[in-house]
Length: 214
Image (cartoon, rainbow, N blue to C red):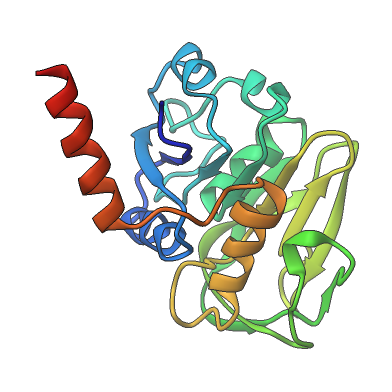
């Protein structure tokens, strides 16, 4: 039987391995794939969830990493992080522009939708870590803002029709104090992943499968 998994689609950011590590720390199996992965391969894998990572490019530039809009219509929960959040907006009719100055460092969620499952258990003014040169100036129709900081209106937003969420900050880094909680909320509560994976159990299962094949 295929291993239940969440997949990370890599848009070239520096924290992409860390995203996968944080998911695995929730005892959920996770694999990383290039943004060039074919959508039919994703359909075949039928992952529990999909995470789009950060990256150094601007999503509105020619030849920047992208993906087919169909990804957001599969019914599989999607979470976009930083560049991934910008790409979701841009691909669905929102607007992303170069910011007046690069925002890098700590920020606080001055407003967030505590009823949204992505923010379950969050404290008021939760600290997050920003690292971006572009900013989302408009989100697509049928999406709603679910978190803001003093300088970033769309610090997080979500679709009202599809299971799609996006955060401008980096939940995977230590400076986002409740970032692991957010990732757990996504992969466990939203995606419905079982927390039954560990490195040891994965090795045992893989060895058993190889012995059976041989």
